Image 1 (cartoon, helix red, strand yellow):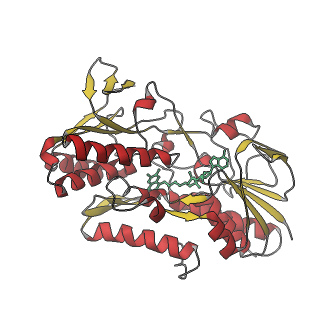
Image 2 (cartoon, rainbow, N blue to C red):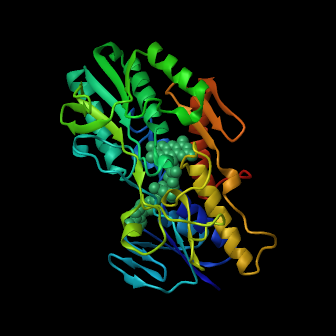
Length: 389
Ligand SMILES: Cc1cc2nc3c(=O)[nH]c(=O)nc-3n(C[C@H](O)[C@H](O)[C@H](O)COP(=O)(O)OP(=O)(O)OC[C@H]3O[C@@H](n4cnc5c(N)ncnc54)[C@H](O)[C@@H]3O)c2cc1C
């Protein structure tokens, strides 16, 4: 039985391990956290609609259900012939290696004065505590929400979840009847943030901001973050008691440390079948890779899962366990996002032919909640998987 090591226990790595086990491969998954953090539903932590245990799945449980081995360790370096672990040292004992360690965040001056909702889950927990402390003690204040860009990797910008948290916090404050005491400010350095969702989405976002009385400051480069606000290139400053900021992604340190082929931004270069360029038996999936595709492409969970399933199939094909041609991810590049607004949502979709945003008052919120329940139960094998999900 061929041995396959998967690095990273996020959305991509877990899906790969599950699908590889369907072919009976000997699978070992190595990750630095012992739980899968379900980022798309973590947006409800700040408003206390969900708690930490609702948005995770312990990897031990997944490993029991699907029969893969789990090791908790940190990957320090990934190379063409193996990888190095913090505790486990150098490893080369695999027939295939799948890299799924996600991305890191660009560094900005004063980032320590901001809170993020990406990367280490501890950050969103700290944001939740601080937000609720301000609401409960001061009962008023200025809250800023923003995201940054990466000129070297436009697809690594993560704006959707920032809009979701902003709208959810607005709804939360209204429910608590303190919204009038708070100023909500959105900021981003690009002139048209959210542009890749298309013109309709931009217009709708603008309308929502006006309707909800959210101030928007865009098109100004960020110079630094301070404990009490954000300073821009033109010398102006936003005052903020609490700043939520999501920097754009950049390549993982373990990839930068190693010799896998990568872009200037540190993302792994892959073929369309997810094989790492110039490597016979190493694959890379999810946020850690450089995506091929149109200008508006974005790194999303559903693309990470397609890559994971394709990779399991493609390895099985090479081992004579499947028939047909290698599967590629490129035709699956689209933007599909159910954007939650606390009391409803909107379905954003973009492909090469169309860009649309369909408002889904009330039901949109419950659809996303339903997806979260489906995701957890189906990963644990408690309910059947729907095709393609
Ligand atoms: C707040 C938020 C909301 C989102 N909402 C949506 C949405 O609604 N729809 C959608 O499609 N996408 C959404 N996304 C994007 C989606 O979550 C990502 O595209 C997806 O998580 C990528 O999966 P991944 O496995 O590549 O990376 P990750 O999920 O980041 O997983 C990486 C894994 O690797 C592990 N790891 C990292 N470094 C190391 C190391 N050195 N050693 C060992 N292990 C390591 C981590 O612990 C983690 O388990 C959202 C993202 C965020 C942050």
